[in-house]
Length: 135
Image (cartoon, rainbow, N blue to C red):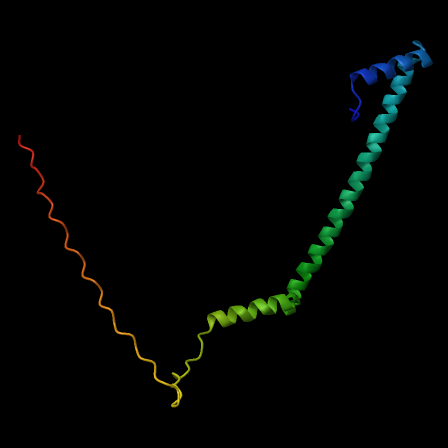
């Protein structure tokens, strides 16, 4: 209902309205108040529906522009798409094979590290033979 208004506050407002308006005219006043609130809610809903329709129409216009741009191919000229296209073509095309580079003659030769032999795999442990069940 109303935020921050509890039952006791509503009861006080009702008693004051009963004393000010009187018991004879109170039902008529409450009915008019209800009709006013219904009209106010209808206007608010219509206002909200109008804004929703405007937003929907703007979104449709934007989508139509994007579809038209896709049909014309204008979107593919966008820098974002050209950057993506460049990266994709670089990833797909193999790099050119360059000849191996020779070390400079005045550079000291680096000694190659001795090769390390891999340790032999440990033999599998001897397992007992399975016991056969007798019948």
